[in-house]
Image (cartoon, rainbow, N blue to C red):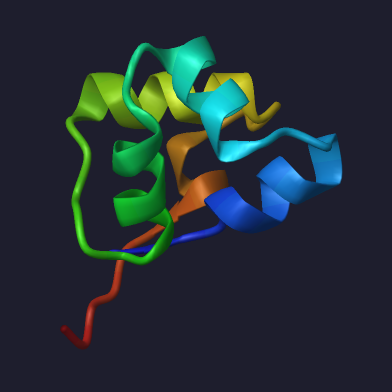
Amino acid sequence: MKTLIREYRNKLGLTQEELAEMVGVTRQTIITLERGRYNPSLILAHRITRALGGEHIEDIFLLDEDG
């Protein structure tokens, strides 16, 4: 799964640590998500989307239909 977490996070001036604290995960989880190496639960995807100012999960998380 591809994500726009890094782009949204940078626009908001948030560090990985700050975002992690906002959504209740570790910085390592944010790193792994940004690299596309981890698919979050629906609840975590929703928390991240809201923390980054997105309205829909699809604003941040992009389904890679080819992979």
